[in-house]
Image (tube, rainbow, N blue to C red; front, side):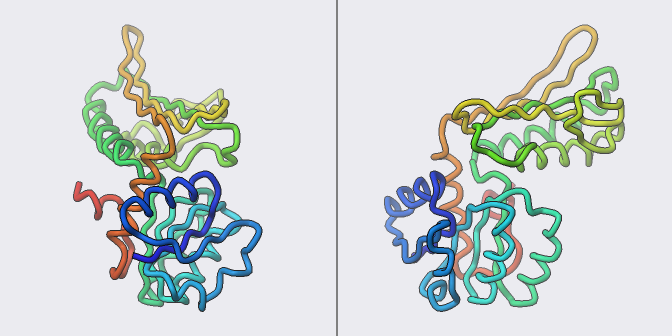
Length: 238
């Protein structure tokens, strides 16, 4: 499979190593130095594009892939207010868009565990739920896309909470997220249910970017030749 890498920072380089180890080739690498090379002609050489950039460029990158007829797999965050626009454009071009806030297989199991625990806890209103996420200091968005996914899954189940907030002084109806930026932490997410007598806590902690990169390559393998809006639920079948 021929892959275009859009975003060639630490994550892009990790994806490249895994892709090459699985027998794929990299036919295009785009970073901040050569953004002008992201053309329809260059993209057309790829079977799929893997995109990890930032909110200021992600949407335009997706649109360029749709125009080129190249499936795009993305883990960029901070652009989701334009998600409806992106998905409509993908469908209108009969393209393929695979998006995940986190491609780690472990995190996606954690998503399922979070939803299951949220359902269990609806019977115990004496427990209040909150979240903490920790990432490296180079991560610009807060909370993380993973934290937002976790929060939205809780909000869909817990009728005591109406929205999430980063404010320290949160209201009873708000799900408080503490977003910390420390050192080179790849990612730690903790959900805590606290009562007057005890607490219940679940945590996912990443050792490195390798798990995210491996999942992104699996998603690219799945997306090649497909059309429509895809997610990790389609890939993992749960």
